[in-house]
Length: 281
Image (cartoon, rainbow, N blue to C red; front, side, top):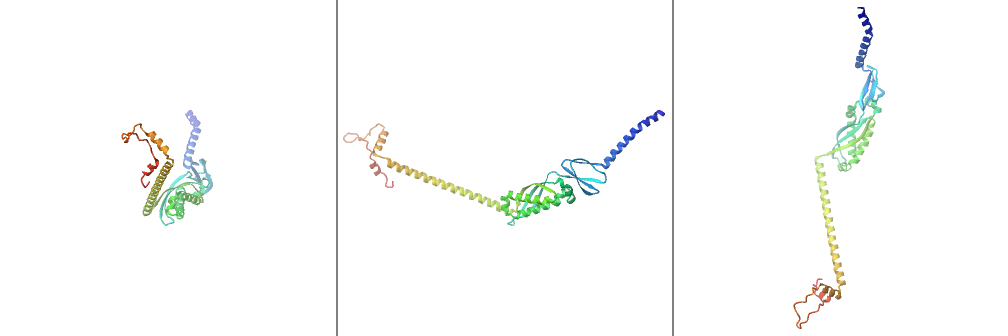
């Protein structure tokens, strides 16, 4: 009896401490006197619902339960697509699809949450109307054809205007991409017809230029042949003709003999040859 009592008395402190530890763990789990901010997040600290100036970085942070609460917001680069209708300078309807890469300024995240809200509220309440207004203002400065041909210039203007507009709300625009333009069916057919006509005109110009070059080449060849013939006529002499006739002779005399039985001499007279040419030469 006494030994059992002594054992209980010895074990009582251990059981007390063990039970106390379990109770502390339960209370800590329920009230959570700490918070963990994950990678790519920042914590907005609120006391009784009032946003504080302190912003929690990544890691574990002690807080006062019940009194303090933490709202975590994502500060990583996000991508959202927007579609907006606008009119060009020549009053053509343009539907533009725009992709925006953006993120919340980590140093101002408490003010952003206080004035605007979380990431979803930023997209719906701030970015969507801003994108629509910037697109309308930019496309109104250009004709429909310029919107297509000056795409890079339009993209740069939209990028700069959107960055300036959203920076006031603590939203940083990393990049803007013009994904697609869509025009009315009638205007799209007109653009296609114009492109076909331009291609046909370029093809016709190429063919005409090629024909001109070929004609000029024929003229040059004819001039060259005429110059060669003129030079040949100037260089022909009786001695040269006699020499060429001898070189071409195959060693056989003509089979028709003269009346006196003598062989005719080879005698080529250039004057006689010239007299045998047609009148037009």
